[in-house]
Image (cartoon, rainbow, N blue to C red):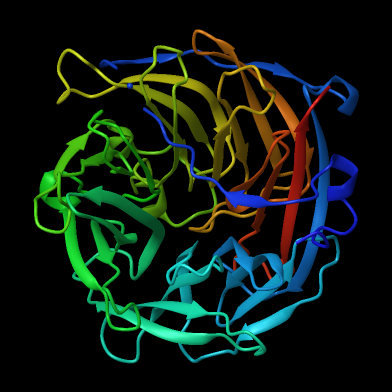
Amino acid sequence: MRNFIKVSIRQFRMAQRFWLVSLILLCLCTGACNQLASRTNASDSELPVKIKPMLINQPGSEHFGNAIYRRGINGPRIAASGNRILEWSVQISAPTIEVVPPTPENYQNGACAMDINNDNIDEMIVSRTAKQPGTDLLWFEEIRGQTQWKEHFIGNLRQRDGEEGFHDIMPFEMKVPGKTVRGVVIVVNRKSLYWYEIPEDYYQPWNQHLIADMSTYGAEFAQSGLVAGDIAGKGRQDIVCGNFWAECPADPTTDLWQLHRYSEWDRKIIRSVSGVPDWVNEERFGGMNQLDLGDMDGDGMVDIIATDAEIPDGRVGIFCRNMVNSSDLWKETIIDTGIYCPHSLVVTDINNDSRPDIIVGEMTAGGWWFPRNQDPKLYLYLNKGNLKFRRYVLHKGWGIHMMRMALQDPDNTILLFGADEIQSWYKDMATHVVGWIISPKE
């Protein structure tokens, strides 16, 4: 593990171990207000953190929907799936290794890393269009001494309507009386939530459990984005997806989940955009989010942070729970608007002041024929307390899609990474896999 990130990490004392982090926390009331972040055009010397960009690889015109960080046999790795799966060591100009060869079926947006067989090596879980009707959920195992990974079948799910496939996949783990249950949560068709439980023999198909069909709870429009945390305060892994959160029962293998709406972003028509098909301007994109959790107002309770992931006039918002009536919509605070397709969101205390900050990344080109972004940015919203934030531009020029974070102990140096999603109607676009090493200023 000492040899990963051979050039840049040493400069920032990242010499030992990364852990993939999902920051978990949430909170409060009803209504919306705008509390836009104060904006700063800061030079590098004026930024509240140190940042080192890393161009890890440029795979060319091949499309990748997602990139994941995993503990590999030979150290930390980043992997991404398109019509094959590629992997890179975490370093500048990393060589490309094809670990799963091309197939006629394409891998979809969702992917995650998880140590399925408890050997301290992470496997990769992905979805792929199936030869039979539906979508296959698969996991791939790295085999010592072999270049190619071994494929294993989890399950197949047929879609009724909505967008094809699984947009989001996330590890899930919870203690129930007498055991710990483990598996993954998936978003199906941007309308339904399922979780797959790892059986005792993990090489066999996994046990499928329905969490909720969001369309039966008023979700007329697409919902996506996925994060887990103890929202209800019962020590369980509740799930947030789009404008809803699902309350985890005492035993998620047998009991029913309860679904709650916290936001109505999905009921708003976007501002008209020129040059796109008419139906795009009539679409409701507000349920297609990137999501994270954190105690943003310092009241000891967990809040939901959301972005409009798919539109060129995206919002960054914080939702605090109504503790008087938990069935009401949560209190909404908009901290920024006009962000281009912010399909990347990470919440972390970036400057060691015990307040969670927000990092948001723009894409180079959103879907649905939206105009191209000529100068994508990586933003930091520094938490100043009382839901007030100061906005900084950390970096310009690299679009990012489904950005994720790995955390370095003990000095809070982090690695943000991801692959930009290219769009087929822009013939000159090329995928790049990038990272940013960020550490507090001393």
